[in-house]
Image (cartoon, rainbow, N blue to C red; front, side):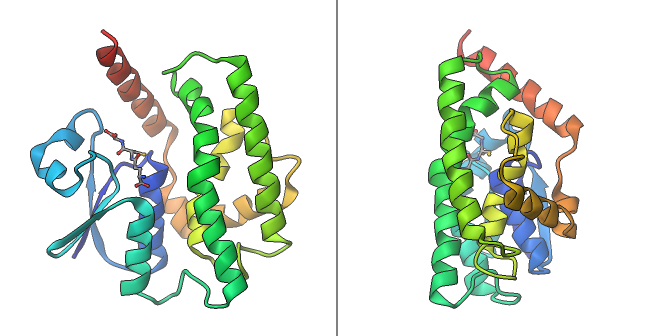
Length: 220
Ligand SMILES: N[C@@H](CCC(=O)N[C@@H](CS)C(=O)NCC(=O)O)C(=O)O
């Protein structure tokens, strides 16, 4: 059976969990406590950079959430989470890459403040929000009135961006100016896979405490 090394508060890991649910695949979940489990030698043998998610499929193991999503798609193609039509596929892949390369780095300073591990620096926060606005405008253009990125079916673009964008209001970046993005977030939230994998406020508080303790140890 597939084995997912996971932590519920991690968006990277949640992507894989959502894909497994959407594909209806049975799997065993190993919940990692990120205050030390990730440095255990058995886990480092699977994930040398001590990151979750990691997926083990028999004698094969993978890290990097996007690589895991592509592996699942290739091995378990039904239901498909990548469109075949070239333009739709291009949109889906653009959204996946822009999420990883543009959206996530811009969110990072805001997340640091929310987690209580960095002090708010107004200029940095403003620059991050401006970058996020560019990403949201780009995403809204790509949605182009559709239900999902690249068409009417859920795809790896929705899964990749759809575990990150809904956090923006909690980080002080409201979606009021992006009604299509807000409607898309609401649509995702209605799917059982999003509901099942939603982190609770208690999990968030627990993760804040873990990260703050890790920071304190690093800079002692
Ligand atoms: N590029 C990786 C990033 C994975 C990653 O950063 N995972 C974080 C949780 S979101 C982690 O495992 N942190 C624990 C650590 O670095 O010790 C992916 O997409 O899977």
